[in-house]
Length: 302
Image 1: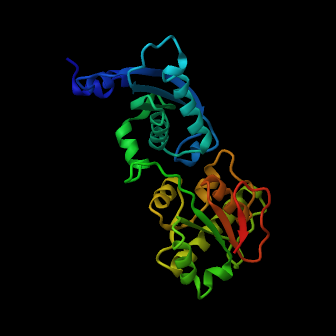
Image 2: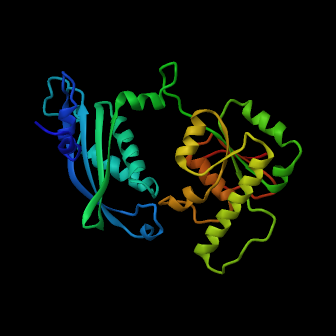
Image 3: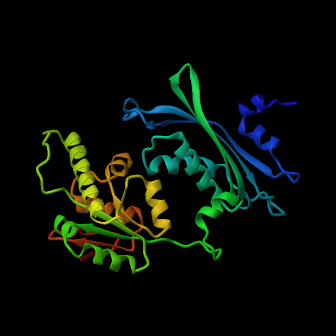
């Protein structure tokens, strides 16, 4: 009989078997899949790849009969490696926990997948493995994406760029009321403050200085109205968007962690990148700034 401590360190397939219901499901698995990844919360881990190993077991619905040896009737193993590759390409992450959640969510989007066991381990930290394992089910995932009417809804927020004059304008509250009345989530973005900021003479560090200056301006806007809550991570933003809240974007984390993020320090270009990333309904630009061209999102002057 397997002890609790043995089961805790067992392969996800053994854990799946041990926790199976009276009507156990079929399973597919991916074992010892090693990828070179730039991941980690510490500065020494940034800019360097390390080996990360994935072990995944997915419980699936019974395959339709007859199977006819047809790959289109099953959940292909390729879907597991594709889920990993897609999430690794989306942005640089600090936490294995975040990566595991996203991989599990993507796998459970497959119609055959019912429950996913995802174990991820770092192999190069020391003479040992450090890792995380999660278990997620389709029922849990559905609660996150399905509305009360049982239908999935695509959310297309309104992204609004405010120049410094608009931030301090006396009618800011009325503008927020009008945007909120449109019934869409509202993401506010801001530019650089008017005050002088440090000049480093070095492009990578200057980029960080400018991004931090934009975030300081975001906090200035937050002080003007309690509805303007500053948020920095994609998880926070997704949470607020799903609840139709107003938020102010602090760009540093998303921009620096993106694998194909914008290299420009122009705040309007950053706002447009966010709008495209969030599949926004449109970007509204307030202020005497140049409107970017060639966007996948409608851009208009406010």
